[in-house]
Image 1 (cartoon, rainbow, N blue to C red):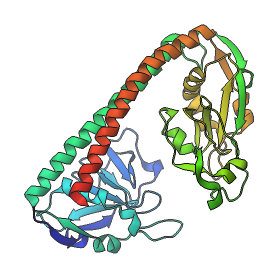
Image 2 (image 1 turned 60 degrees about the vertical axis):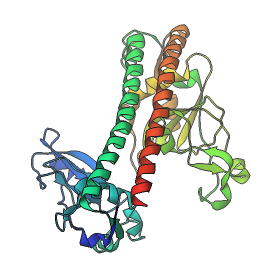
Image 3 (image 1 turned 30 degrees about the horizontal axis):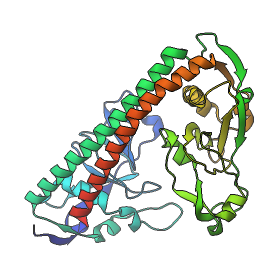
Length: 363
């Protein structure tokens, strides 16, 4: 396979999408609206007529790469790409651009922006068009395998939600007239601890104690099994180490997202830890809160970011079914979780395969 060494400016041209406010979008519109990180709504009109590669232009998702559907609207938070000529395979270039980490070419201000000129200057290798098509097909197949595993895990999650509903009814409306208690009467509910300022001081980080953030909880699928940061001994002294089995609840940015710790960990005061006193199981609470999540998010005060205070959480009314029924739900959930673990392992392998293929073809 003989590669051609080029700059992206020799391959494509970019131009900004067109501004479209949230108020003007139409949820019943026929065409998806793309911002810097994918679909953000729908609209009755479109400004591109066929599937197109777009690049996040500004903000947190600056440099992210997406492939649109046919007939879509692209906002000015993204660049629309056009090929300089027809010797390139669109899907191959999509994978190439995703692998280039274009965000590194943005400016370094508080609001990152990437310019067309910066994109044009990026150098890369381009194989002959027939080889591009082959590589794109291989990567497509690997990506589809990964998506199928993700879809399977979503189905398992839906199954768990359905079982919860069948056993307990609508826990917000309390359709089965279970006894009502204050959430604070079901166990201890306390904020995480992070006393030091600034919170990301170097001496606090890099040790042996896992540090859980709100994003780790939002992406946990109910069980926190990984983390991105750790505390040092100094970090631990100004924080608190919570035990395995603690239910973590976000109260800032992402409201009422939950995850159960599978190891001892620290977390900041944007996260609340719940430890049951035996009247409820943590998984029952987790599913109950997931049903309340939208209501809590809609009613949360908003300043720089949405948040709810500890008293709002403690004073929530929770229906409390018989503990035997809750534990039966736990048993059913364990069987589902075993299947989810198998699916997660399969997805890790398919993700590793895709990553390996990307490294083989583009590095």
